[in-house]
Length: 196
Image (spheres, rainbow, N blue to C red):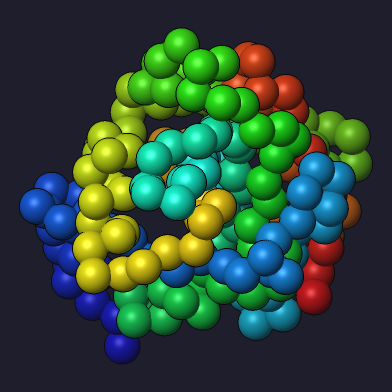
C-alpha cells in the first residue's frame, strides 16, 4: 500500500539533497531518434512525456554536445512504489533523442534556453507547456562528477538533466499521439506514440 506522505517526502528529500538523483535510463536499443515511435508500457495507464535538455560526454567526462531528450516514463508504476523506478523508466521506446546535436560552442548558455512541449491528438493540441533551463537544479559538471564517481562510463554517454514540464495526470499519452519538443536552434524532436 502506498503512503502518499512518505512518497512526497522521498521526492522532496531528493530534490533538496546533497546528492543528485542519477539513474540508468536506457540502452541504445531502447532509444529512438526523430519520428521514431516512443512507447507506452502494456502495464501502464499513465505514461507521460518528460521533455529535457541532454548533454553528451566525451572520454574524459567533458561535454561535447547538447541535444533534446524525451524521457518517456510510466508515472503510475513509479508512483505505486519508488523502488519500481527502473521499471517505469526502462522499456522499448522510453527515450527519444535529437533531432540534432550541437557542440558547446554552438550553445551560448545551456542554462538559459526556452523549451516547449506540445502533445497532439488527432491533429488537435491537447497540451502545451514551456520552461526555461534555468530551472535545472544541478550544474552539469556536478551531475557528471557524481555519475563518474567510481563508475567508468562509455564514450558518448548521454545525460538527461530532468524535466520542468509536467503534463497533467489526466492527459496520459495515448497511441497515435504526436509529441513535439523544441528549443530554438535545436529544431523540433517529434515522435509518434505507440502502445506496446
